[in-house]
Structures are given as C-alpha cells and as structure tokens.
Amino acid sequence: MLQDKLKNHNIILASQSPRRQELLRGLDIEFVIETRLVNEVYNDQLQGTQITDFLSTLKAKAFTDLAENDFLITSDTIVWLDDRALEKPKTKDEARKMLRQLSGRKHKVHTSVCFTTIDDQKVINDTTEVTFGELNDEEIDYYIDKYQPFDRAGGYGIQDWLGFAKVTSINGCYYNVMGLPLPKVYGFLREMII
Ligand SMILES: Cc1cn([C@H]2C[C@H](O)[C@@H](COP(=O)(O)OP(=O)(O)OP(=O)(O)O)O2)c(=O)[nH]c1=O
Image 1 (cartoon, rainbow, N blue to C red):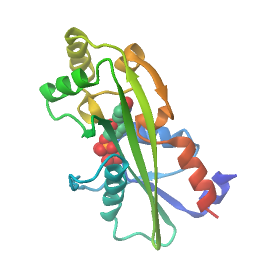
Image 2 (image 1 turned 90 degrees about the vertical axis):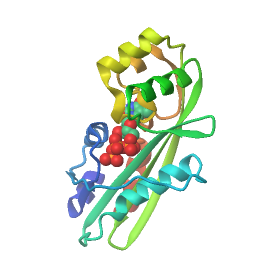
Image 3 (image 1 turned 45 degrees about the vertical axis):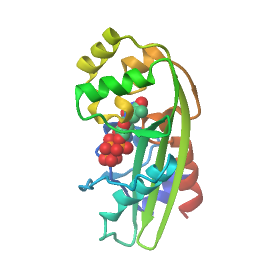
Image 4 (image 1 turned 120 degrees about the vertical axis):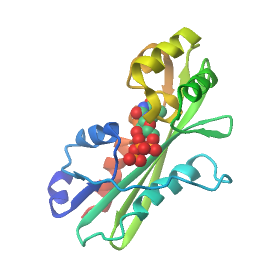
C-alpha cells in the first residue's frame, strides 16, 4: 500500500488552506504542514492552467532547504471565466461582482499540484466545469455576510451554502474545485513513490 511506502518520506503540505489540509487527510497519508510567505504574482499572458501550474511551482520555490526524504506538495486553484482568472476577492464589492458574473453560467475551476523533492519536480493539473443557477442580490449578500468567502477563489466554496443551494451540475472532480484533485494526487503518489 502507498501508506507503507510513504513511511520513508516526510510529506510536507505547504498550504494554509484548511480545505487542502482536510482533503489530504482524507487520503490517510501522514504529513506535516509548513507554510511560507509567497507573493503570488504572475505574467498576465498566462492562461488557465498555465497560471495554476506557475503559481503552484512558485509556492515551492520558497523551500530552498529540502532534506533528502522531504516530499513537498504545493497547490493553486483559480476560477476561470470569460478567459480571465477570478482569484480570491479582497473586498465585499469584489466578491459581489464575481458572484454576479458567475450567476446562471458555467465556469471552469483549475487546480495545479506541484510535487517537489530535493532533485525532482513535477506538476499535475485538473479542470472541473461548474454550473451555477441564477443568484439574486439578496442571496449573494446573504452568502458573503455569513460565509465571508475572501479566502476562496471566485468568492465561493462549493462545499458551503452556495454550493449546496446553487451548483446545479459539475463535470469533473469535486475535490478539484475545493483545492486538491484527490484521485489524481493519489495516482501520482502511487506512481512516483517507490
Ligand atoms: C472554487 C473554490 C475554491 N476554494 C478555495 C481552495 C483554496 O483554498 C482557495 C484558492 O486559493 P489558493 O491561492 O489556491 O490557495 P490558498 O491561498 O487558500 O492556500 P495555499 O496557497 O496556502 O495553499 O479557494 C474552495 O474552498 N472551494 C471552492 O469551491
């Protein structure tokens, strides 16, 4: 089993996201959490998964002191709509604007995961299509005030009220929307860890 092979490795999840921590725990893998400050800036020529590939790799760059058996996992998620990335909203107005844009439409959620060891680095990504029903202003304000989605890409969490009430369909991995494409991560670890 993967769990036995992983005993020789020190898995580090470099993420402050409570969702990512909870999701990785779901794979029954032992890991430690270590976060470092990263300035998440990218070239605006990048599109879709190019952005998340770049940012997940950038998050790994802060770890210049990996030990022999360290296995670092960094990740990034964006909402992609009308050829633009919706990241985490900084203000209530920004969140409101994002949710109005997402209302009644289909968008993509891209997540990349970067795996780094002392002498190797690989990036995988996954894309899920999410369709929202119509959101009115009362619902949008209720959601923002109660759930404060400022730490969630696109200003929403599929795992909370808005997801329950308004996501009418998804095409692809649910966990990818929450921040980690778990079956892909598990498959990758099984292949890579010997
Ligand atoms: C779309 C969506 C995003 N999210 C979250 C997952 C990520 O935490 C966040 C996207 O921001 P990220 O910049 O990918 O991650 P982060 O800053 O939260 O954490 P870290 O860089 O330390 O790993 O949005 C949800 O929880 N549910 C959703 O439905």
